[in-house]
Image 1 (cartoon, rainbow, N blue to C red):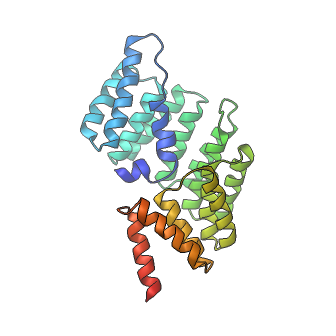
Image 2 (image 1 turned 90 degrees about the horizontal axis):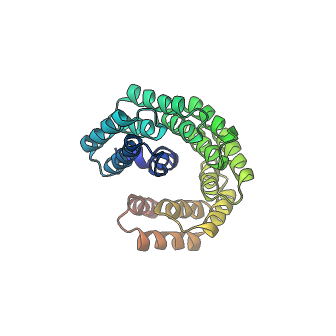
Image 3 (image 1 turned 30 degrees about the vertical axis):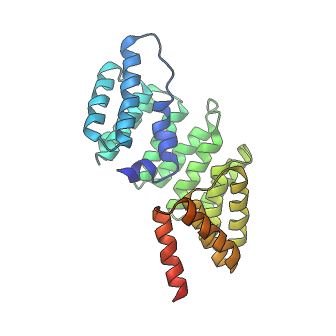
Length: 254
């Protein structure tokens, strides 16, 4: 369940985000109640309380099934319940009721990417990026890059991510994804450059620290690798990345 909510960078940003960011309402009490129940459902999903989340989603759908945010929340719920057909149906209804809604396009694209249809996901993200109503196309291009990267198509991933940086520079998430792509292509100097640019814009997560350690180890720069390792162990001692670091250090010492 948590993997669905946090596994890919676009999940919370684009699937949960539209629900949580709904405006206060349109003056219709039932419509306002639907938005509130959808928000509550997402919060319960984050806590793993799927039965309560489903109750809230059912109420929201009864109150206003034409609200794209309600349909997106329903799609996310059914993904977590491992009912992909129902999930896709709700994501498509979100797009139907929110014609040319970039949030709905992104939610559907994320669904495709999470469920083994990366080409369809990328195409949907690109539609969102080209949508004149979308004020942050760099997000959709970055998500297309994540989708292509997870499918092992690194050339296409890099192309999408470069498009993201032309839309907004610097865009931290695109820089981080470029660092990952460069590392996977064994272009370690480029990976270092993108990672350093990323860290100039924001603080690093456990995953960033682990990637930094791996990049610097590949470049045979033990002092810099040790700095990343120390930051990872001090700031994120109980993280899965810290355990991975221990395994890498152990293997390197063999």
